[in-house]
Structures are given as C-alpha cells and as structure tokens.
Image (tube, rainbow, N blue to C red):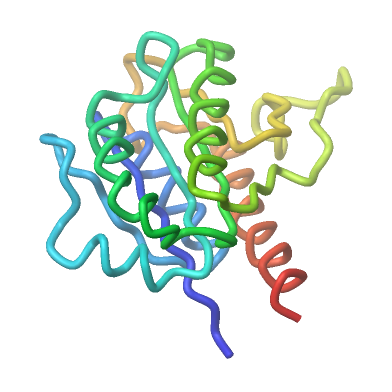
Length: 185
C-alpha cells in the first residue's frame, strides 16, 4: 500500500520551493504550496488530513518561519482541535541566505508545531560531511540533524542553488520514506 506524503511549504523567492521539489523527488510526495497571502489552495486541508506524513517547509526570515507559514500554522488549530494529525509522521526543512542564519530556530518552530499536533518527528538520520576534503556539494555539508537545512546566497536564483543541498533534500525525502515504512510495517 502506498503511503501519502505531503510537503506543505511557503517559498518567497523560489528557493524553498526548489528544496521542496527535491524532497518530493526523494519521497514521491505531493507538493502543497502556501501562497503569498498565507493560504492553502482549494482542497489543501483535505490533502493534509489524508496524508500519512506531513513535511513542513519555510524559508528562515529574521530567525523564524515566514509570516505566510505562520498564518498556515495558526490556521492548523482546526485540525489540532480534533487531533487530525495525531500520530502522523512529521519532518521539516528551511532555507536562508547564510550558512547559519538562525535556521535552527525555524526547525525548532516546525518541530514544536508537530508536537502540538501530537505528530512523530523525524530528523535527517545521516552524518554531516565535515572532513577537510568535503565541499558544499557534499550531502549534508551544513550539518543538519534535527531537519533539513540549506543555504542559497541572497543574490542567487533558484537555478543557482548548491547541488549538494538539493542532493541532501532528495536524501531527506528518502529518509522520510524509510521512517514511514518503519512505522507502518
């Protein structure tokens, strides 16, 4: 039986969308974009209700999620009230212009949101590429463990993203499938 994975995300400039696409490639998931006004498309809430796993994604702006993602998170109080996402698998990712950029604050917010909903969080499940020989094109070069972190220079287009970050995103998608299989076997 195929499991449904939904990647719900906001992307202000296209970079976070590119990461979401790479995660979806890795897990066979469905993309669910939060629009510029912080809303889901028609049928979005139903997609999330039917999902076995929900992957949250937001750029890191000023040390946290975008206001559009926050609006979505606040609106999730309706499914929270009826425990609609309880025991679903959860994971998260973020992108910002700097190597650190307080990305961990964003991941912590996504984790906390998942815990409010009673979800089961999974992190990266892989070591960082942290030897002298490693480069930004190596998988998990930024050393994310709690979730996926990527960095794109502020003057780079989505097409200029670091290939290693996109490969890491794809591997993260595969990790989500792996963990979901452990929960459902």
